[in-house]
Length: 216
Image 1 (cartoon, rainbow, N blue to C red):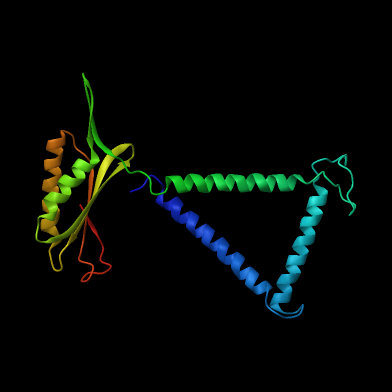
Image 2 (image 1 turned 90 degrees about the vertical axis):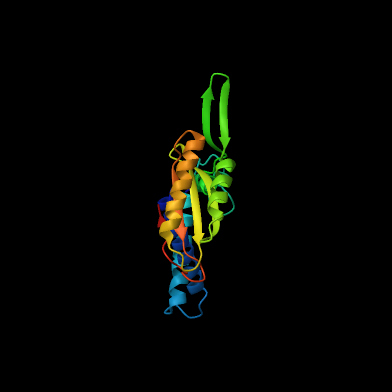
């Protein structure tokens, strides 16, 4: 329950991982000993060809086609530079901005206000901490519950609660789900407004490791 898209997050991780793996494997192969017929020699040949191609591309794309910047000692357009370098810098800047936005958005969505009532005298806001404490206290008193974690999030522009309940070893989840539903209905009556609630019931980790959570 975050404001960032789960599919985009995973896609970004996959792309970055594949690129990093490919670059790492390429560099490792390039350092392997051997002559021109070996795998390392072939990769080093590719690097030499790529370096020559980059040099030709830079020479063919000057910022000042007229050559007014003057010629350097190597016969190139000294001081003129290449617009490819400018385009690469702009692309890198764009990637930095995208990653910065993704980092800010990731893990976001938490809210401190659960319900806001507009009254003639002003607005009355009910803190999310109130609901979190009320739900946690109501469910933690049960003997078949070992822990309760409640958090408030903004989902599609509306505040919502996520309740994660861990039951004791061997306990049936159905009574816990029913109790959580009763607590949620009571909370709606107290707040005077229905708040979306996600209840996740998980088994005791030492007994049901890796068990699928139930959502009610």
